[in-house]
Structures are given as structure tokens and as C-alpha cells.
Amino acid sequence: MTMMNIFALGALGMPEMIAIFLVILLLFGAKKIPELARGVGKGMGEFKKAKTEFEREIAEGEVEGAKEWDNAGKKDSSES
Image (cartoon, rainbow, N blue to C red; front, top):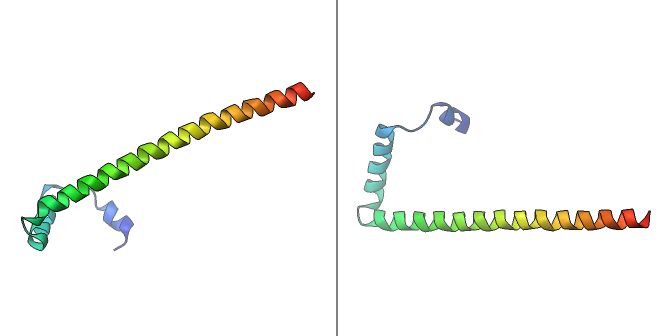
């Protein structure tokens, strides 16, 4: 089954979520689940931080690019 076929089946419902949770519980045990959740939370936090930093750098680059573009346009018009 391809990924498109899996996504075509629809979103996960409550029975599927419970089944996934039970499989995780069986695989890792009750003591490991809080550690796994903590790790996932930290990973999500790091991802969010990196995304925010990337967006900030892109915005700064756009501002710098606009300034350089304006300065280049002023040089061209003063030379004419």
C-alpha cells in the first residue's frame, strides 16, 4: 500500500488511536512512556525553536534585500 492510499483512507479515529497506544504500551512498558513523551516534547520544542529562527532569518533577509534593492535603484537614477 502506498502512502497516498494510506492517506486516502482518512484520519485516525478513536479506536485506531487506542490500538496504537496499546501497542506502544506493550512495546515500551508503562515506565518508559513518560520518558518517550518527554523526549517527543523536547524534540517538538526544538523544532518549533528552529522554525521560528528560520522564519526570523528569512524576514531579516527580505528587509536587507529590499534595502539593497532601493540603494541600487537610487544609484542608477543618480547616474542617469
